[in-house]
Image 1 (spheres, rainbow, N blue to C red):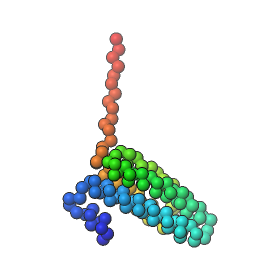
Image 2: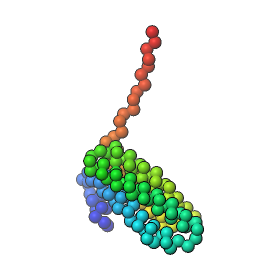
Image 3: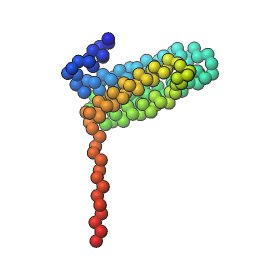
Image 4: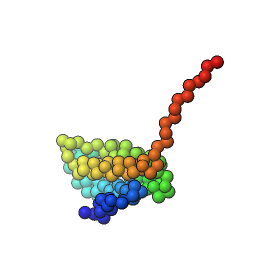
Length: 143
């Protein structure tokens, strides 16, 4: 088990700690995934389909890296709404890295892992700063 896992399974782990750990781990994973795409997967891709898929994933993960970096900045500023907004943008960009179950690549697991970590961080952010309540509709008085 990693240090992150050990902290997460403790009974008294705070929501702030969970938000920080999952946000940081997601950002680290995004950097490592981007390095893997650029350093190994894209240069070693043999067929056109794989090259196109990895090129799209490289573009997506550059954006994911930037969004998760911004999310961490807002997390440490305790602005959880902006943190969640940037993490949601990261999730949208992860989905740009399309992977096929029938054409398995290392990106299938990377995308799944990124989505799980980012979802947990967003959920923790919602607990720390819930969305504003919905406005109630007021009826106009007619004379």
